[in-house]
Amino acid sequence: MQYEINKGTLAIIPNERESSLVYEDESRYIIDQRPFEIMEESCKYFGSTYQGRKESARDILGAEYKVPIIVEDTDNLIVFPTTSPMAEDCVWISLKRVKKFEKIDANNTRIIFDNEKEIIVPCSYRTIENQISRASRLDLIMRNRKNR
Image (tube, rainbow, N blue to C red; front, top):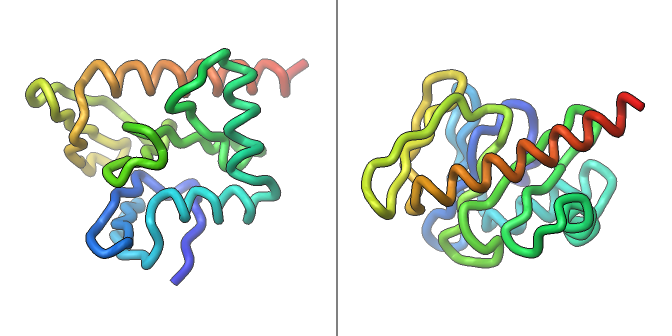
């Protein structure tokens, strides 16, 4: 099964044997692709390349690392990585679906989505806070550009 990121997507989590665990509104899927491959295919599905979307986000934000990606631009469907996108443990989170996040300890953060589902990601609260801030800034800039 090939998977495209959509409005229902909450998170894409690396799973064993080069697969991913994808959380959606009321479902959970195991997809036989790594999270980065899902990102690449989703960008292509919506008419661009991952590299093109990454370069655009870098230019807009003036950031080099762990940039959020606008997978689909009509609805500003933005996802952000928890680590380097190429890292084996990188989790991708859908910005618009995050309701809140809480520190568990120095290396783990709980993310609560707008439908009350929760996941725990192996990264610091500060990292999640920075990534949400960066993705929100990208969202705001793009919305302002569209409204001009």
